[in-house]
Image 1 (cartoon, rainbow, N blue to C red):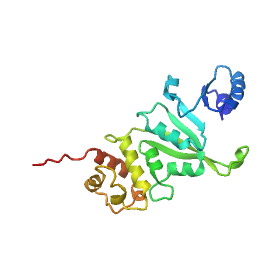
Image 2 (image 1 turned 90 degrees about the vertical axis):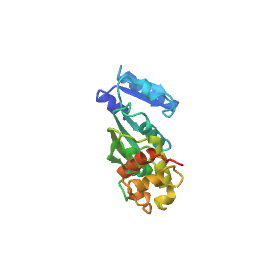
Image 3 (image 1 turned 120 degrees about the vertical axis):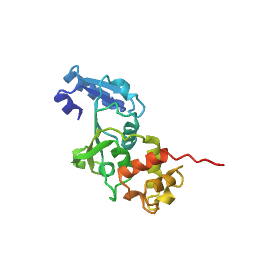
Image 4 (image 1 turned 135 degrees about the vertical axis):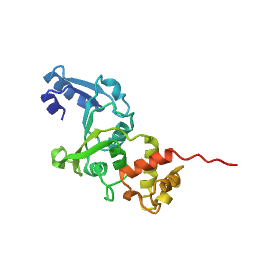
Length: 222
């Protein structure tokens, strides 16, 4: 992937945790002088925005064990984000969860978090035979582009609502959302039936719910 980007004329900053890969990257840098910067470190720990003067396109074959954590981190940062687009390879099942729509088997928390202020699509499937050694699972490349965030919505609250709702996805919302302050009142105020289940709510429904839960009406006693 890195060689193809360099051959296309791109300037590439590569973050690599595995020190065994550093010599190969050094050779690649020699083949494309001035185009490749190599940073040895953990992408989960590095302050990536500080590495760039302009917004980069993030392109990565993500390790399956940290791919979701990296994605949620990039999606939860301050908006408008520090990156222009994300083109990422995931296990096929995870890719399907990112782009899933309402009432589908893969629709859940990750779909809402990925779609509420960005557009996501599967760019291409990748057969396991493309890797050496071949993994047991199939892969897919997902392309994500940001758009304006809906006003009045707190990401942390949206995370909490989706975590509660999909954490008990077979339960009715009036049961699964009990632990989130203001959620049941918000359901009633925006007209969502509490007997529905999480997978029936669209991304826009969850956005409206998060906005309503954040702006709970004041109560006056006495």
